[in-house]
Length: 162
Image (tube, rainbow, N blue to C red):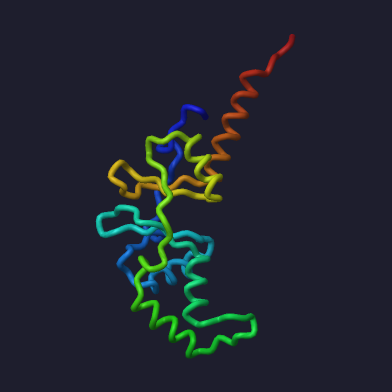
């Protein structure tokens, strides 16, 4: 795997996991709600250039702050829910976007793995030279490739005796 580059393993990102940075936060809420296994949304500008990510945890923190939830005893009311909805329509995704951590298509897998380990990421956005989002690299894809390589190496080293 030492000569493998990111573009060989990256997967295309579903449009449903991409949001524009000028959209209201309500779009992020809807995206997370409709894709229950998603915990990261990729944020792009109008030109498709990656500007960051929104993690589900960040969105929940935003809701907590907006509702002024300071203890577990806080009771969330129906009016609280309406207030979050109102705020989510007036605040943009850009306001809750975290820093850009990405790899380029031509980067080595070793670089991607080191970065993912350092930043504790299970997926990382892949961009082209212009910064446009082209896909994602998931740790599960890396592990699958590693397993194939190990199995291939083992079968190449197997000795047969007559």
